[in-house]
Amino acid sequence: MAKATKVTKSELEELRLDIRNINDLQMKIGSLEVQKTDLLSNIIGSQKRFRDFQEKLKKKYGDVAVNIHDGTLKFKENGEADKKD
View (cartoon, rainbow, N blue to C red):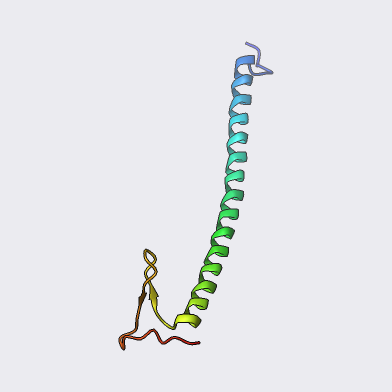
């Protein structure tokens, strides 16, 4: 019996299909990683804006908590907002 020198056409097609699928999946993972990096950058920017705005509110109203539903201020124990004009 002679040794085979090639795989069959169907085996070659199956190999190509598997390699194509693997490559496609790797490309999708790469794309998702880029999206992930962009989203992480957006989160960092949003957190910085939030901290900056918190600092602005603290300078205006003092060290108080703001109810995000109705905007009311929760004053310190002495009952005043320690407002800095």
